[in-house]
Length: 291
Image (cartoon, rainbow, N blue to C red; front, side, top):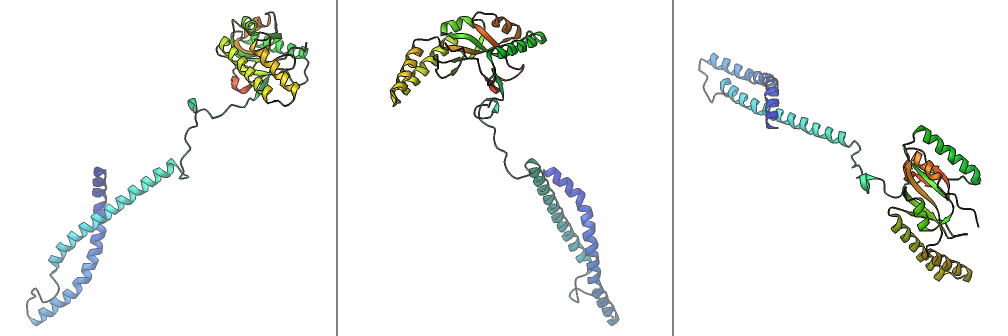
């Protein structure tokens, strides 16, 4: 910064000095006119001009004026530099934030992901009012087309079973597949529940126990005896690891999903569109026919 000021000072001082010298010269000429008349008057009287007879001689005034001009010039240059620096800083600040406000910080979560659950935008499963046979045929045709196009492409799919299965039976069906979610409900009319799966054995056990506890809570708070009894039966069935599972979400290459559809007990394999994130999909399995 000091070197920059020196350069500006060296560049700006000469022209500023010339302007000041021109102004000072005019002022000096105005001051010298009374002195010239004074000299002529003394010359007419025949006496020499000495100090004290009038204003100071022009030589002394020139020395004083030169030093003053240099000082004033440096002050003007310094003021100019200050204005330039302030202007540059102001411009940079406005460029960084034209509105003068601070941008909000990144949202919470890994990778600054938006807070809260992602709202599903795609539904994979039977449409409302669609017959099971029509749905099964459309899902099979869709999977066949994807397999022909890219048999090794990883796909997410919702799998509907032909009937209700126990946790052990479910594990046998999906033992060679990566299972992400399961669907279950106590037949024949129990509420449909879903559970995320990472460790199939541990997560299935935890899901059944959690829903059994919730059913016990409903039984204790119910005022209708029939409702209380229904909740107690659900809790008992879940703790006994009932045949309550009827669907799952899996991930596998398209060709292996075709193989899954040939396993006994599997009713429909409905793939999601390729490249889609599972968080944006609502998977709906086809419930087994009522007994």
